[in-house]
Image (cartoon, rainbow, N blue to C red; front, top):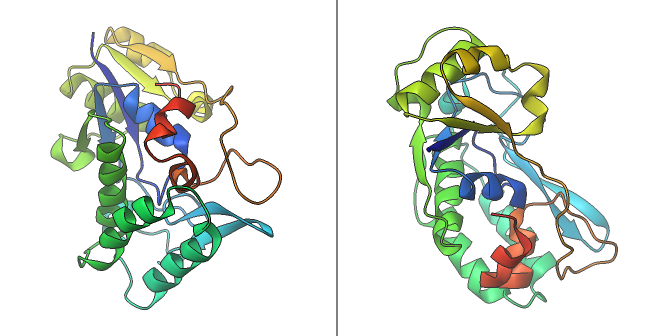
Length: 226
């Protein structure tokens, strides 16, 4: 039984994103779809003494392009993001270890696109957490039209018997299309996470996984489900 998940790349995603990856045999980065502004593709939240704060990659608001076609901008935003992380997490237990890991991603390579940058971060964190799921890309497959039909087709090409989806997709996924192709549609549950050590006041679950990594290091997997 092969499980597959299909999802857009996100910038420094939260722990649930990595839990979904760890729960399947193959994870398909689905960046052949429209870029959405003010979304997780180019921004995420971190914890600060003043509450949650957005870290945003300034890619512009043009939605007439696919995610994979969004160029990664030049400028000093990378340095600003690193300095912001350092300022807010320098007192965390595993700061030096995790900061060293991610700093090299930000500074040691030129990236052609937002998708490439996001994917590099995702793969690096997966490797650190010993998440060995195969990661592939939607453009490696034959793509057809239709939101549901395309997902079913991707699952078939990946030889999936189970498609694991986040719960927000319930509003548009047509379960009958998967059933017709003998693909089980299963829903991932993001509820019930344990509280982990965290700086700065009241606990927040829905922040970047960097928060968990800085505070827990390799023990991060103890606070995940998969």
